[in-house]
Length: 132
Image (cartoon, rainbow, N blue to C red; front, side):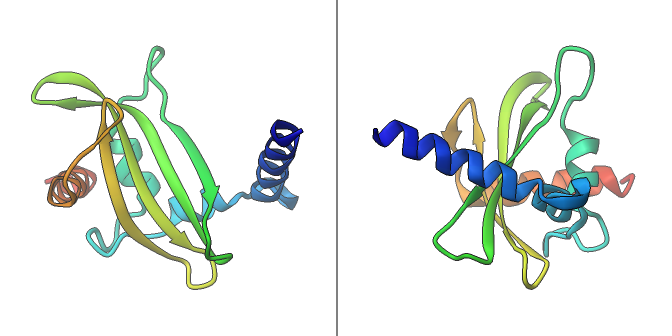
């Protein structure tokens, strides 16, 4: 019985996140800017850094939080880390009311990395998006 309720909640969330007009909370988050990378949208820095080709795609997801105005947004995919293709997840918090992002963390191979590492990665992603 509990599984059905959980599945219904997930389905409701998915329906809510892709509400009318086809524009989702993920699209809004991708158009927003991290304070660590002003002038470059989240979508641009992720799409420019994560590997997107026939075999590798970036999976975007959004999850509810305890704050009704904030969702946790993740971008999962492959990046080149020290010349090796590595599974990575970038996690941000998106406040829908204020249209603001904040960096939450990064995982490599499903393992949390220190916040300083997440900040350095976003800095590298930002530099690449700026063409530096």
